[in-house]
Length: 402
Image (cartoon, rainbow, N blue to C red):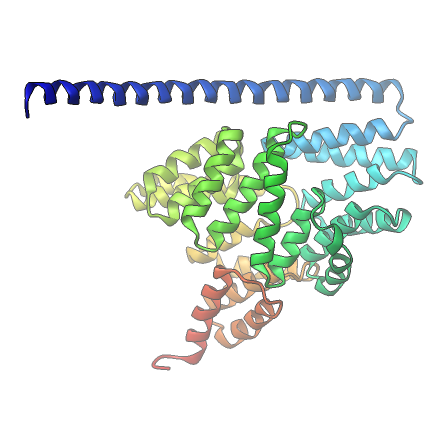
């Protein structure tokens, strides 16, 4: 290469390196701005909580302020994973309803949502049913009731509710619940399109908290992750993290994504960042498995013990992620089987039947597992997890050499 060529190459290299450094500085600056914005949102939220708490103390007979206070508690619970805030929200809802039983849609809606956060779905349904009975024009209330029916496995009731909501399915408060119904009913493509359309519609809005905007990235990222669309999951989750860099749910989802790629170190990195925000049992299990993959069995067992502690402190029934973890690792199978059977007395949904079928399979009760798995598949849900379990159970029931 001539001297002129060498000089030209050096200049080009300097330009490229300079541009890369500048881009890095810009990304760091943008990251700081996002964190500052998140901090300001939280400061305002906590100030609002203090404001409405004072108003409630000054006038304990009101209903609207209690519902607003409870709604803020629920928002903070979603962001932090703090169970105590969910209980505060429930108490605020009950006090609001005690003060005003009629014309109090916000109180009943808050009560239903706070009970759902504790997986007390039957009680949540009572509150949502009262809401729809007293305010037939409340479409969000109908969608909420439909969502609870899905959790309880009352699919025919959910079908009736969501079929009537089809014309308004694009509304922000209805779209996620309608999409979940479509997904469970075997229309995964429709569910994904609706979520993606809703996400595009809210990206330009400045009146929504960053947590709510990032939630749609989380939902779409988890959807793609379940369906094995790794690149799509990466795109959504990475964008969500740009909006909410410290969101424990996004970090946990990224840990699970890294685990599917076999990257144990990245799994641990994302997982431990998530756990620093909230002790999510599912994330603890994923990180523990990553340590086991790296040969650190002592650290892996520490995470299993931490996972059990986190499950013991959760609100509501036994954590399904913990049950699935125990079954997949061939631990305490009789205990899980008994717990799953007890939960199915009230909550007869697709994933409850799938968990029971998997517990029976792990107990070597293959014909029973096959029968129950057929119930899990009867709704038509498109989920690779269900298909994997079904294939394993069918093969075991057929016997060797089949």
